[in-house]
Structure formats: C-alpha cells, structure tokens
Length: 402
Ligand code: PLP
Image 1: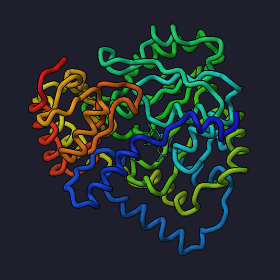
Image 2: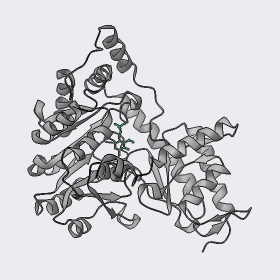
Image 3: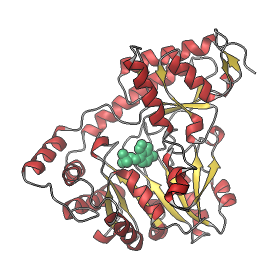
C-alpha cells in the first residue's frame, strides 16, 4: 500500500483537533481552559537556552551526521549508562526530530507487509497511525481500568501470533499515567522470551516524570537478555520542556539503527543542529531542577484528583507518572444536559465540556478507550483548579444515567 492509500485510513491527530477548536473559541472571546495539549508549561532551562545560543553563534548551523553529532551520541550513551545501567556503542544510538520520528522510522524501517504491531490501549494516538503508514497492522490490546490500564502477561501471551513483529510498551503512559514496576516488566519479559521474533519498542519519553515511591525501570534493564530486540525511544521534549526543539533519540540493535539511518538520510537528514546542542546541554547538565518540576506536577496531580474524585460519575486512577489524568466517565454516558443535549458517549461529553463549559479535554476514544477523557495537568494550578471545578459542576448537573 502506498502512503497515499494508507492515509485514507487515518484521521488527523484528535488531540490537535481539540487544541485547534479551543483556540477558535478563545479567538471568539470565550474564556477557554485548555487541558488538551501534552507539553510542560515550564520554560526551557536557562543553561539549555544558553547552549543553543552559543551553538548558533559558533556557527553550528550546518548539516551534521544524519543520526546525531558525536557529542550528542556521547551524551546519550552516558545518559543510558548513568540512569539506566545500560551500555551502548555509537552504532546503537540514533537521534531524530523528536521521539515521534524515532518511533515512525523504527516501524517503517523494519515492518514487512501486514506484520502486526501490538499496541496496548489506552495508547498514544500516533502509534496506530504510524503502524498503518509503515505498512503494518495495528493490533489493539485492551487494558482496562481493572488492570490499572496495564498489559498483563496473560493478555500478552494470548495476543501474540506468528504475524507479530513489535510490541509497543509506553511507561509512564500517555494517556493514563500508568507506569510499569520492575516485577511487571519481568513478567512481560518471561512471555517475550518464548517469542524470539517479537521486538519491543519501549517508549520511555516520560521517564523523568514520576511520583511518590515509583522507581523507573526500562525493559532492557530488567531483561538484559532481550536487549538485542528492544528499541528504547526517549527524548528531551517532556523531561526538559523542549517540545518545539524536536529532538528525540533511540537506542537499540545496530542493524535496526543502521536501517533507521538509511531511511532518515533520504527523508529529513539530521535533526536540527542547534537542538542537538541544546540536548547535549540538557543531558549533561545539572538535573536537580527535575525534582522541582516533579513536585509541581505531583501537587497538580493531587489537586486535580481530589477535585475530580468528588464529582459525581467520574472515577480516576492515581497515575504514577506523566502529566495526565485519565478519567473514567462511563457513568455519565447516557445522561442529558440541563438544556437537553444527549451525552451519548465520551466524545459528546467532551464536546459539551468544550462548547458549553469552555474546558478542553480529549475523549478517551482518541486513545482507543471510550468512556474516558484525558486531562493534561501540565498547566498552572489556578487554571487547573478552575477547570476541575467547571467539570465537577457540569457532571453534577447531568440528568439520569442509563
Ligand atoms: N511518545 C509519547 C508517549 C508521547 O506522548 C509523545 C508526545 O506527545 C512522544 C512519544 C513524542 O514526543 P516528541 O516527538 O516531542 O519527542
């Protein structure tokens, strides 16, 4: 199938659609509280900004090696050694225009026609679309609230077929904030050992945004014997508030990294030279500010949880990472608004919240799990307090559940 043909089976990003509609309402004068987007509201750290300006003035505005400068590769290798106890060589590291490009490149550079990619749901909206564009078949695995929105070994074992090429694991997860503990990863590794043809894309982009006593582990660390079929995807967007700079990186088997390099050499070439300089500074620099950011996110998470849990018909699981709440609103489906609008599903509820209450959240349907909405708490405490109050009040006025 050509990319043109594949595109006919794909929708534009629903999270971006919500953000766009919120912008339109705001331009029309409405006081819209936007909790749709997935990016930190903090400024990029000063020392990162300085490194970018310095690189610019030093003339670092030329092409670099396709998959990253030697300085960036070294910073990434050091990061994996320091934080994850993993050892990589230069030919096992790639850098691209955001973690998004690394994910897409990995699938496009490896999938044979109609091979399956296992995607636990709720999932980041782009995984199924990327799989389709890369000529593969997304196989969605439902991971309900009862399982903490996490993939269980039993479900994984039951879902793998001889067409399965990849499993995508995202921890901490967008949209649920669920994060896999060491033992949970070890149990999934047990299943994967029985299926040597299945590779794992471990999307660790929210690695540093974790709460309470949670200790982050990545699968390759827990199961080093599987490392030759694991691609770790990470980047500086979320951890270092550098979303617009578009810099992600991957670590995995040299054969896959080589195929990614070849693909990238004919599409986008190197990621922005000055963004690479910024990423080197971010990875090598002081990391203490991350503690403060985490504390701010934790405070916001707790405030939103408390506020929403008091709302009728809304149930939230306590996230251990990322900066999202994934609210179960199945009890509100089948209700009616005071002016007679039918809340037929999560999409209708989010439309009502946006159009009438001016709060932008994203329906769970966009993430492969209906009956929910995702709220991003990467925004100020004041906006969050107001938004949660509006949501809770609106929920309280809905009449008659089905
Ligand atoms: N993976 C997940 C789970 C995400 O939520 C995102 C961004 O929203 C990305 C990867 C890609 O981030 P970026 O391309 O900005 O590095």
